Each structure stands twice: as C-alpha cells, then as structure tokens.
Length: 299
Image (tube, rainbow, N blue to C red):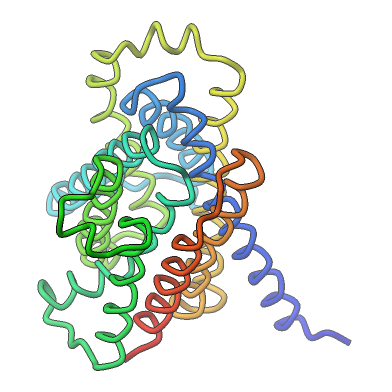
C-alpha cells in the first residue's frame, strides 16, 4: 500500500513535470502571439490576465493580499520592473525574430547567471564543480547562438533576437537577486502577485502607445489563445504548482526540474511550429542542460 507521504511526493513530481511542459509551451504561445501584436501589447495582456488570476488565487489560499510596508515598496517595484516588465519586453521582442527552441536554450542560462550574480552581489562561493557547470553552459549557449561555431560570436555573429533573449537572462538574474531579500519578508505567492500587478501597470502606457486598443479589437482567436495560455497556464497555474513543489520537495529538488523546460520547448516547437532541430541545437542544448545541472547541484 502506498504511504500518504509517498503519494503526495508522486503528485508533486507530476505537477512539476506538467509545470515544465507548460513553461516549455510559453515559447510556442509567445511565438504565435507576436505574429500579430507588438511586444508591449503581448506582455501587458499576458500579465493583466495573470494578475487577475493570481489575485483570485491569493484570496483563495491566503484570505487577502497584505499591504506592503514602506521598506518593502522599492524592492517589490524592482521585482515588477525586472522580472515582469523588462523580462517580458525582451521575451516577446526576441520571439519575433528567432525560433522558440533557440530562445528556450538561451534562457536556460538563467541558473548560471544567478550563480554568477550571487557570487558578485552576495559573495557566494563558486566551487570548482560549479565553475565547470558554468563553463559547460556558456559553451553550449555559444554553440546554439553561433549555429555550431562559437567563434562566430567573435565576428559579431549575434543577432538582435539572441541579444533580446540574453536580456531576459539578465532581467531574471536581477529579479532573483532582489527576490532573495523580498522573500524573507513576503511569501513567494504574495511577492509574485505584487510583481505581476506592478509589471502590468508599467507595461500599460507603452502598450497603449504601441496601439493596444486597436490590436485587442483585431486579435485573432489564435493570438487570444496564445496570450490566455501565457497568462493563465504559463503564469498563474505554473507558479502555483511550482511553489507547491518547492514546499513539498524543497527548492533544490524542485529546481532541477527547470532543466526540462528547453527539452519540452524544443519538442513542442518541432511538433506545433514545425521548427527544424539542428545538430548544433541538440549538442549545445545538451551542454547547457548538463552545465545547469552541475551548477544547481554543486555546493
């Protein structure tokens, strides 16, 4: 007979795998969305929907959204500015110009950037194993961006789409480093809800300037489905399941599952968008995932 704890862990593992499928799908949904609308419009619509869902979930699970203390306002504003506003402008801008599978492998560098940022800001030590993981990930990313030849990067062979995705990595690093201090005072659920609300507000004016009202009126069903997927499944549901996994299994064990995101993104991009899988993508992606695994596990 399966013990209740073991059954609970199995459910957590299932939710984490499904979360990685959902997050892998965000690259396909984003790619579909930006075919018709601009990056600010797509990002605003995504987080307007996500903010509404997270508010409802916050009241459902926590009873209310607690008011911020004065000292918490600036850090939470920075969360919204980095993790929501900047990240998603870079995300949707990048997906306008490069394939979803390529984008997912560049963004897979997030844990590596966070490890480097933590070493610089919080003076966290980088072990030899962690440095090896960082090196493998950077080599893999260079293979992906350089289409199999890392030396292409030295000759200025980096496209704007690649740079936008690297901007995502830097934005998420900033979000995570700021979040380390915020999470000591607010629950991850509440902090993320505030970050989404602030990010949506910051995105509103540029989205209006980009033609939000006209774009919303003319969006096709495919675009609405893509944005709804991003807001509901990719943001609200994914966030809830991921943090339930962290609570059940701990951050280290739950965090390893993030390595599956580019795997699912590549598979879904090939299946839904018919994007070809180049050998350099497979080799570079394998190095990125192996390097990220070492970086996460090293102490």
